[in-house]
Length: 482
Image 1 (cartoon, rainbow, N blue to C red):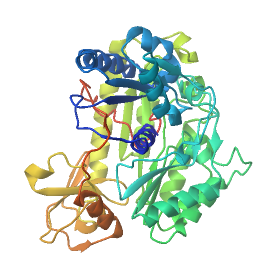
Image 2 (image 1 turned 45 degrees about the vertical axis):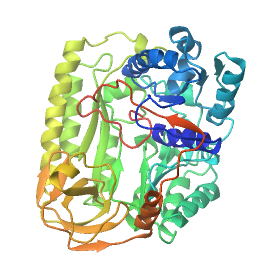
Image 3 (image 1 turned 135 degrees about the vertical axis):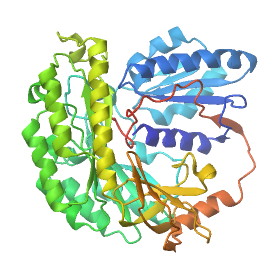
Image 4 (image 1 turned 180 degrees about the horizontal axis):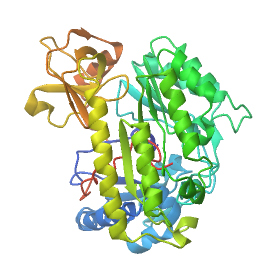
């Protein structure tokens, strides 16, 4: 969800005459931070990055800094108090105002802080500078009606608002016409789609409708909530050819007692029952999850229940997080806050178990032939290894030997898996087939003749950002702990 919001911000600024700057802040006239408030380290990263930009801004008259997103919605005036060199603060509901606020700050020579309390325009109506010409995010809803005690997102994103199915499908069709082969449907609670319209089967109907769009080869979605995961969705996934055999299903805890304290509205048996049904309908589905370790009151017995679910579910991947106290949430005031050293020790045990399971599940892929959507930027060592990378239908990362013929991001290759590691697969032999696609054509067209920079430079740097913690990567987009 945050990545998609950033695409909207970039699209707005490009429409206003800005162009993207380099990967550092040295040449940028505008630097925009799109923030998250799910975990405490987001605060630290923001203020650390703002501090590093202060001398650059002082040395460059006219440079502007804007801060948006969930942290801006939460902290608003705190940001300009702690970093008075920030020019614009805007929230989650008024992304569309960014160019206007930058201009107003420039003319009035003072910080502009504007936080809307409700959504002004559905984000998908805003212009977009999409990062990929072959895969795209499509929002079906914004906001969340859940009241999880650890999560501050509903207070910052607001109540769930659904787009009309016709609007969603029109956007998907337009993307396919531009060359996109894969779309990911986004929502804070994506499978609750329809609650705003009074149709409990709206999401399964939407999946089936996507299956009828000619040229759309891959459909994914994130993140669902077990409470709303109904049999009709499982049936739609299994019966719709272009819906991929992959599911990200947040667990958070395997202890029913802790789940109740989290206000998660399902219990261990219900969660494992969903996994069993998904596997019965799609035996080869890769299932991933989110898990929080050290929620207030979590005992060793509770943690053992989480390990039990991990062993039973056999996740292909798990995004694991140490509980982060967020001011304004009920969990922050709960008794029984777990000591840091206990949380760390449990976290390490969980990561070790999941690494073992991920590796074991990946080894089962060896010998299989899969069609891989060639991606850009997925393999950090591709240049050194003379390989390319992409995603299998189940979303596993596959590195493969370069074929003799040219292949572009967005093209499809057929490969045989020969080696498995915990977090990737390897096809050491060249692809047995290469399928050139409209998506590859779109990538080639985008990269053929870069336009000369005009107007004001737009930069989105990662100034001083620390390396991500092991196994705590955001999963696709959206709130990674919802």
